[in-house]
Length: 295
Image 1 (tube, rainbow, N blue to C red):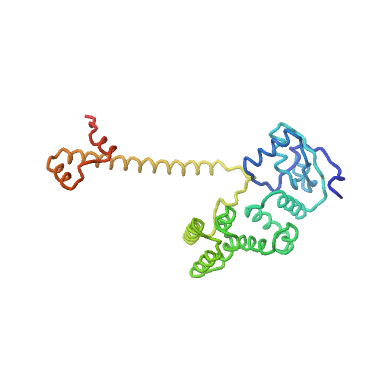
Image 2: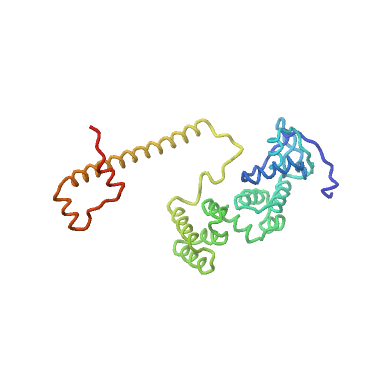
């Protein structure tokens, strides 16, 4: 059925479960809010009827998370919605297709969505055909996912290294990785600052491993009290170390200042400096040395 001929239902916002939450920048979200506020909702959200009894939730969101969040921010309690019939895998594909058509897809989104589609039994070629990407791109993300290469995936997501280079690194040994970097340099894929970042990434991957414990956080879960206490303690420990380092630096500076003040009081030392052409000091250092110490 064509989208323009679909029946539209008015659903409560608190009845729609966001099953595949995404993150977006503040600016892009504000653009959605401003658009809805000024001209209204241009396109209803798309949902399916929930096949699981989860209390207040009667429908699962297929696409339209930004519109739902904007409606909530604007104080609305209901939103127009297309209600379609689809399995969970079909709903995921429909949502992914719309997201890819609407904006640039990030490796973070593809990592999560491709992984779920593969768990649902789709092949790399099948996923590529459905979401309009190349099979090689899908296969590359899937390979990094299966090998737990979260560190490389984060670098791809942030644009630090191309996906093809990340895949080659993941399958190469130490000498092979250097060959991959040389080839990427020759192809103008990694030059200048990006090459430096890639080398640092590889070193961190070698020392700390492929994974990143916080790369794919579960945004649907609220941190536990123990986790918050642990994070607070770690932050407190870091600040305590910074204070100790600052105190140590201050004590060294006081020692050097006192030593220089005593040396500068010696006429023989001043004559030696003058003979070597070093009878002037930087302004800040001279001011500190000439400062009278508290009794």
